[in-house]
Length: 123
Image: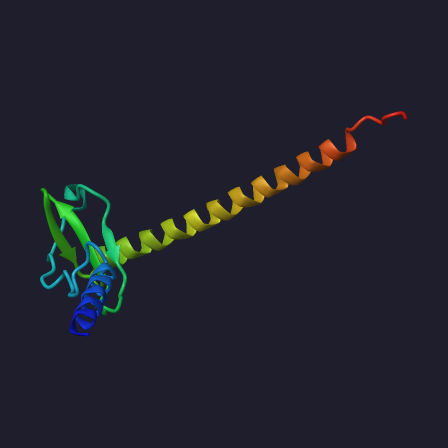
């Protein structure tokens, strides 16, 4: 009976550890913010982490000289990054919707052409 309980607890522990989000710790990453940043020194696109159950703050992480730095979301640079990110997601959503609409229109047009183009067969 004890071995069944131990096996059950082991399986439960294994399943709980598999449910952890990879790459994210259970704490906020940003504690100290960069005061000023020259935009030309930013090497990669900023990574924006929205608030979640692990950290209730919006976090913006940029790479400068092979080091990750945090930008205050309330600063002018942080506001600019968030504004550009929201524009980018809107463009992606619009282009995805228009592409799917074009695909549906083409397929329905081709179906109509195929159904009307069949020759008549004589018995």
